[in-house]
Amino acid sequence: MDTPLPKTEEEWRAKLTPEQYAILRQKGTEAPFSGKLLHENKDGMYCCAACGAELFSSTAKFDSGTGWPSFDTALPGAVTLTNDTSLGMQRTEVSCSRCGSHLGHVFTDGPTPTGKRYCLNSVCLAMKKVPRVCFLL
Image 1 (spheres, rainbow, N blue to C red):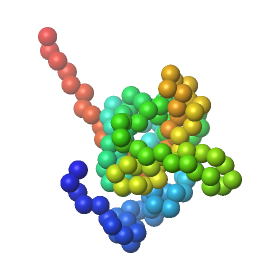
Image 2: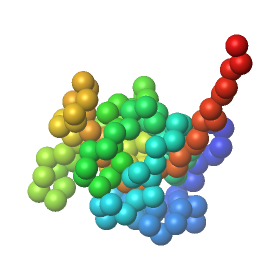
Image 3: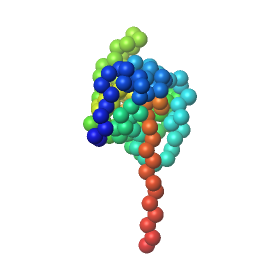
């Protein structure tokens, strides 16, 4: 990606909606079952809403029943994981590796073979749909 990223919080505030800024830049959380991508089931890539970096394939998405979009694996190098002890809990924060924006948290209670549940805020993601291709034989 060659699009320059905002460098100051004022630039981020101008680029993002107030809800996106509160979650992506200030590590907030959207209400469960409120996100527009919770029930999205089209083929494609889930990208960072702040910088556009591809983060998760739709093939990694599953319904965790938690109220937030959940994935069992991230694209290689797409996210950064850090220890998060805020709110008196021990969690692992998930951030975009490109711009450092907060996306959500990852847990080790996923139902798939990876055992991971990347629990993300819809407002942090943008869906890039992949068109279906038909082949005639």
